[in-house]
Length: 121
Image (cartoon, rainbow, N blue to C red):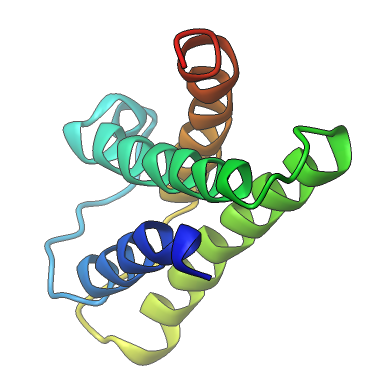
């Protein structure tokens, strides 16, 4: 499945970045607008786009079912990585706001793919 290779590599990059040591500050509503949340949204948005590009190369239609599977899969991947951080990496923390940023990124990736990439390709 060569068409999904970029998405697979990007998922590995996300996994690597998610398991590296980091500084976690106390959660507040202001964390939602922190630069790190934009990073979360960007990496998950790009993951969704790469998967949709792979789907396109596989001639999969852009049906509600296929879109739903991609979005649900990417969202669950982001949630799983938050739990992995919590359970296996003592210097990393589970952050609900990171999950929200991941979800927003997935949705924005869908929007960018549907309304920009498809229109100009």
